[in-house]
Amino acid sequence: MLRSVREFRKPTILTLLLIIGEVFIEVLIPFYTAELVNRIKAGVEMRAVVQLGLILVLMALVSLACGGAAGFTGARASAGFARNLRRDIFEKIQHFSFENIDRFSAPSLVTRMTTDIGYVQMAFMMTIRAAVRAPLMLVFSVVMAFLMGGRLAMTFVVVIPVLVCGLLLIAKKAMPAFRAVFRKYDRLNESIEENVRAMRVVKGFAREEYEKTKFAAASDNIRKDFTYAERVVALNSPLMQICLNFNMIFVLYVGSRIIISNRGTTIDVGQISAMLTYGFQILMSLMMISMIYVMLTMSIESMRRIAEVLQTEPALKNPENPVTVIADGSVEFDHVSFKYSKLAERNTLDDISLRIPSGATVGILGGTGTGKTSLIQLIPRLYDVTEGSVRVGGRDVREYDLERLRDAVAVVLQKNMLFSGTIRENLRWGNPGATDEELTEACRLAQADEFIRSFPEGYDTHIEQGGTNVSGGQRQRLCIARALLKKPKILILDDSTSAVDTHTDALIRAGFRSYIPETTKIIIAQRVASVEDADLILVLDNGRISASGTHESLLRESRIYREIYEQQTRGGAQDE
Image 1 (spheres, rainbow, N blue to C red):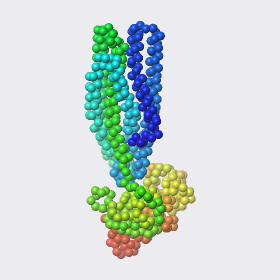
Image 2 (cartoon, one colour; image 1 turned 90 degrees about the vertical axis):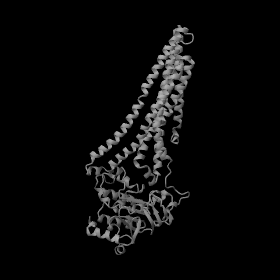
Image 3 (cartoon, one colour; image 1 turned 60 degrees about the vertical axis):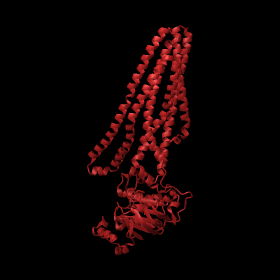
């Protein structure tokens, strides 16, 4: 993760140097204060007292300046580090395959980019400031205490071990609760995301109270862990006070007896004041170290989760010398078998062999779970085959540059996403350089132009995140128009006209024939009417091609196809 420091290496190093300077001066201040007290007690001239007083004021100002500057540079370094780290994770995720995303889950990745990075940022700030300041202050203060206090410094032989053992015990008790919280954050975020995405379903079944109860339980679970951990950590304060008061009583009692018995020849009042200050600095340093230990231990879990993302290699990679030119839109499946996990007992697709010439229109029918979507996801190499090969333009898809391959394939899903922004901006995802005339033509072919113009702001109408302010049919047509603007070699429609009527569906397919005649068109559908005019229709059953042919031949030869057709036509499904 330290690679993410990059251009903020200079403020990071400067922070460390400033902290060292601040600590060095702070440790010298009690020494000069003791000298000032002894001079006043000895009755020296006011001029000497003023000189030493001015030196102390100057040292305090320099220490303040170092501390203030360290705060500024430290904040800049930690915020910059967090920004770079967040960007690095986001870029890494962009190269993840679906397999990688499935492994982490979307809510977990969101938690890692928000909550976890927040903890890591605080840990980085604490490391370059407090984690340097506290140990240095402890070491310097102990050395100065023994140099100035002699036998008085023996108090630290008792106090330091007691405080260290107590703080370590407190941290050890609190850590398991802090670690558990991060896993619960993932589940909480998952609950939030699920609820927001399924808000219509929640309201449709009047399950708001159930969802609120479920969320409250998850939130309360986190509260309990944090409450327990913070109660344990709160014991730092009384332990600190006990050690501080013991040190003060010991120094005052023993120091006073030494001064009286030796008449100030070995230790004087100034040394006692310095010992009290050094004692406070030592104990505060130990207290700070314990807090650093707690914070860093909390952050280690976040660091581990972030490092896990950064160290994960994308499941799909470019070959060493990738092919960048796709000759045409022909597709060939050669004895392809596929399963989503190596541990899966059975294949999702089993021994698929198929050849689609460039420019052909292919329809795919089949029940839920028969492998239709899995089949088309292998073409743009969203997943790799388990056995066999998939060829596009006469070459195995694993030989192509991933970006070039996916740029040549446009996929329109049933639940395709629109992004926050205007309709015009969403359409230009398909072709950033598309003119207004090209936008209009694509929308007209996708049967979207009419409803877009019905909006007061037309193509400049703002789309909410996910396209929630347009209907399902409008969203599908906008996604189809976006894909048409891409002018791909292969266009895949995964049940992407399910929310439009059959008349509009027919007009859209007619637009394909006129606008992209050379593009290979693969249409997954539930309605026979959406694919009956295709050059080739595939019927999938249990991950295998049960039958293939034209509409007429399948009516004669395929029982599954004939049953689907009769069920839909008898019930008037084509007119729905």
